[in-house]
Every structure is written in C-alpha cells, then in structure tokens.
Length: 435
Ligand code: ADP
Ligand code: ZN
Image 1: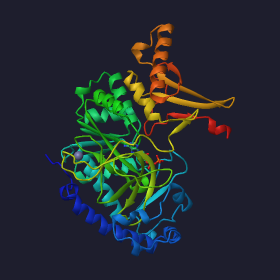
Image 2: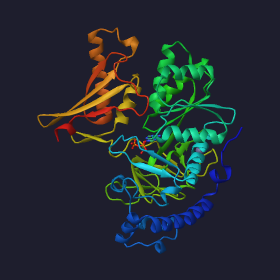
Image 3: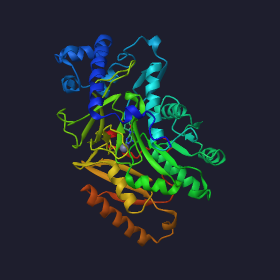
Image 4: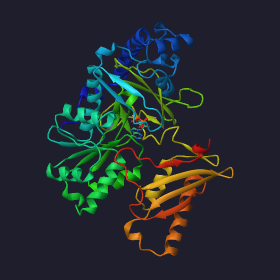
C-alpha cells in the first residue's frame, strides 16, 4: 500500500528540509517586498529589508500579519500577482467576524491540492478508494480542498457538499464510500442518522474519515469512530494559508504533521509576540514559502497549540502540531475565569453524553451567568425528575472541577439542540448584545 503521497519531501531529513525552507523563505520575502506595498510598508516601519532575511533564523525580524490586516486590505490589498494570473477565490466561513478572501494562481491550487492528497494518503487513501466529500462546496475551502486532493490521489470522488443527510447515507451505502470527509460535528450527526436508520457501523464500507475545520476532542473522535466503524483522522488548515491540508494526521495520530516544505510554523506568546521554544503552548504563526497570489509572512492564526519535533514512527520528518484547543478568541472569560468550549466538550463526553450542547453566557446585575444545555440520551429521557436533577448536579460538579467555575446545567430532550452540517456554533454570548 502507498504510504506517502510525496515520499521524498514528506520524509526529507530535517537539515535538508531546513535548507529548503531557508532558500524558499528568501525568495518569498523578496516576492512580497516587490509586490505587496502594504506589507513592504510594515517591513519598512520595522526597519527590515529583504537583505536582512537570509534564512529561517532571521524570521523573527519580520513583522506579524493579522486578520485585521487582511480586513484592512480587503479585497485585493495583499495580492502579489496580477489579478489576471489568479484562477480562484475562496473565503473564510466567517466564524469570528467579517469574511476574509483568499486568491490563488493555478500553481497555488496545485500545491494546496498536493497537501490535501498527502492527508488522504496518510489516512490510507489510494486510487481504489471512494471518497465522499461532504464539506461544504463553494467559497468555503473544505469542499474544494479535499475534492482536489482526492482527484490527485486518483480516488473516485463524490462531491456531495454538506447537508441532505438522507442522500449522504444513500450514496454512502449504494456507492460504497470508503473515506468520509466533513466537519467532525457533521460526522457525529451522520453517525447518529445512520443508527436511527438501523444501519450498523459494520454494514457500511467506510474505513477512514478525515475531519477538521473546527476543534474536536479525543473523546469525540472515539465516539465518531465507534458510530461509523472507522478510524478518524484530523486535518487542519485555514483559508488564509490556502485551506485544509496545512497539517494532517498520520496513522500514529500523535499530532498533525505540518507541511513544512510549504509553511514555516512558529509558536508565540499571544500577549508579547515573543517566539516560544518547541513544546510550549502558544499561538500558531505561519509563513508561507511557495504561495504566489496570496503569500503570508508571519500570519497570526489565533489558534492555540503546541509543536512537537520528536521523531514520528511513520517516517515523516515534518513537525507535528497538537490539536488546537480553540482559538485565542474562542476563549470565554466568565467571571474572570478562562474557559474553552473544548474543555466543556471533554467533560460531557467523559460523563457519557453526546457532543450536542449549547453554552449561553449573559450578564445580569453585573455578574456573568453561565448555562450549559446538554441533550439527554434517548434511554435517559424516561428517567424521573429527581433522577435528572441528580444527573444535572453530577455533571455540574464534573464541569466545575475541569473549569474552576460552576455552570448551571440543563439536561434537555434528545434532538432538541440543533445539529450542524458544517462548523458547529455552540456558544451564545449574550453579553456582547449589551455592550
Ligand atoms: P473561519 O475563521 O471563518 O472559521 P476558516 O474556514 O478558514 O475560517 O477556518 C479556519 C479555522 O478553523 C482555523 O483557524 C481553526 O481555528 C479552525 N480549524 C481548522 N481545522 C481545525 C482542526 N482540525 N482542529 C481545530 N480547529 C480547526
Ligand atoms: Zn507521523
């Protein structure tokens, strides 16, 4: 079986990889300086010129780029080639505000699809596979990225897009899909819908799933693996860096390998901007190395994670990133305590609930209210009121231990919380309405 999509690059010795990055970085910086006046002005303000950047060791001299910069330069202020050389536009899903658009030359698309192909092959994909892509198609990068990657692998590609779960199941069974690609929340929903139809996990032909585009926990992974009868792989990316495929899991699932021949990853302290050593938790920053239309130097992702350079048994030499536990701007500050929705999800799954929940925060009389709504499982629904009150108390205690503050837990009827076909929206912060 094929183990790598681009073996020579994916297993390149670290010194050689570094030399390749050095050489590409010098070129990419020069390209930006020559063609993106906005970033050139930033460099000038920081007193840096392309001559100061001789390789990765000089990266720290370059100024950061943030989402605010991309919004300020919307739509074409970051364009580094003539617009006539671009062949595609994609856009963020706008989870945290105004959409950002990204532009691609054919070369940019090729490299992006190669990255997604690496992820598919790492999940065991070959030309014999039937890849069902139910990430959204359109402006969102999920559908386009995995679709292109699947073509590159030579697999039979089902461009389903998200939604119409009934039809997803029918095609999955009739066409014998072997690899499923979608958001983890949609994968969980598909698993649920399959069970409702009475289809057992072993009755489908799926062997693997490639799930990403939103944070998900290890507990959720196990739940999806069980309900679909597959091995579930994580994939990471963002529109700004092309889309999914910047990093992906191999069979050992000990972090996602970052495609370091195309991106340099750094971890910084989000407050001071200081570069942190490998192994420390901080904000992930990417520098692209090969992008033509939309190159990014030191782009702050706001995703919080850790890098790991210890060797991976799969033979890939590229650095691994831990699952991002959420974005710095996903973090809720409730009564002065930092809370990540992913922590709540971890507790729910540990306590045996499904990942169907909603978090509501509000401010009443200058004090934060914190409510967590969680669905009961169908078999718990018939329990008595006193049994349910006791369960609410038990879950509340578990959440308090994890978070350091106590939410009010509400167990609600099965299926009463809206399902997601794309990225799940689980937090309603009403405090913003009062500002
Ligand atoms: P938006 O910012 O509007 O959601 P994108 O669709 O480009 O735009 O989403 C990129 C973001 O999605 C990443 O910055 C990250 O926060 C999140 N993300 C993508 N893949 C993963 C993953 N595997 N695990 C956790 N978060 C992810
Ligand atoms: Zn590996």
